[in-house]
Image (cartoon, rainbow, N blue to C red; front, side, top):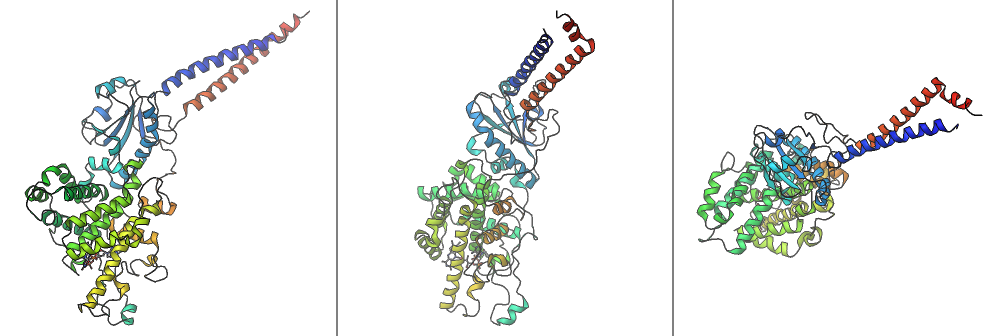
Length: 530
Ligand SMILES: Cc1cc2nc3c(=O)[nH]c(=O)nc-3n(C[C@H](O)[C@H](O)[C@H](O)COP(=O)(O)OP(=O)(O)OC[C@H]3O[C@@H](n4cnc5c(N)ncnc54)[C@H](O)[C@@H]3O)c2cc1C
């Protein structure tokens, strides 16, 4: 009989535990329908769980001022589960770009079982379906998975209309001859071989050359473009759209050309008409002094465009959420080669470039990756570095030719001076002050400073120091404001529920035990024993 009170107590505790387990199962059932709410790494996907609101503003309000990406899913669908890490990665990168461009795009998830009405209203017939809602609009557009690249979304939100800014500070391409150098060699030209070009001049020069090429170099004969150049042009425009910065003035024109591609390849009139709608930024058709000092400006601007695209490839791949979205460096080189073959009418330039290219010069065939799977940043930057080396080799060859043809005195420039960049503009590129030995990462950083619009603190530099492509932020979990239930905050409800049950069970056992003690029930029972 002495065991009876204990058995009673244990029974009560068991009932309590069963009750708790039942309540927890209720929570579980509810929570299990929401995949993002409990996803561990989620920081920026807001999971909509409010059952009392069947018309949330972020979907229904035409006055919602931010752009939104919404994933509609069902918790039971295997593809939706596989999609979770990609969508979370996507949301992290969207958040990062939002901060860079000062344009907020939010990411949401709607579970279509508990939120069936919302999904029905929006005619969601397959899971997962991703929709983009532009700022101040409730008209969503379905996005194919292959287009779910953070940069594409910012293009859809109209970021490319943001004006390019002159950021003199971040451009370290200052070529100033020190008095020490001038004293050493009286034959050097009075100004450096490559002179300073501001960041906006860099992008304007590229735009003006692109504009010039589209207006003059695509149709060199009447009639529609034959298949081969047509393919070359389309591929070039497609990679250009992905690899020139989002806020470049070239983005709108490239988009327009691609949207009207079948029209523009029919003849120069349609192409020129579209080009006329997007003139380069002012001053129109005037290359910067830095681009026109040794030539007309056109070829310098073309080089600049190629370098921008080469750095853009690294940027694009870095933000991709999926290997399939990434650009393959070797394929990108082929696309630029085909552009030059079909549309660069400087005969000698073209033939020289093509023969070097086809002979795998500068180790092109080995160093440019033919796949993007598992690529490290060191592999990826080989594309801009290969282009850089190709360009420098041309600089050196042209100097030699100028001297041979008596256009230039041998001591007018040194070989080192025509190799870009100079010692003074990038000392770390040449650690031993020897132009035959350069530091790859430092040169890449310098290319990025010179040919990309973002500042030095950009993600790539951070990644370079980590030596890998993926962005893995280690910032602490942050909690979102505004929607009341703290969606996407990383709470583990299973964990909290279990602890509550245990604490409750202990409390009940302790309380009942205390009651028995106070009432002396156990003593009474004890006295009953014969
Ligand atoms: C594909 C191609 C092939 C060419 N081949 C020939 C040829 O065979 N013969 C010929 O006479 N001309 C050729 N040209 C033209 C020639 O290369 C120059 O564009 C022209 O001589 C004008 O030179 P520039 O001094 O203004 O600077 P460019 O060489 O045009 O360079 C433009 C700017 O790019 C930067 N830069 C220079 N070197 C590098 C580098 N290595 N990496 C990154 N940025 C750099 C500098 O800021 C420079 O001002 C070619 C042009 C192109 C686009």
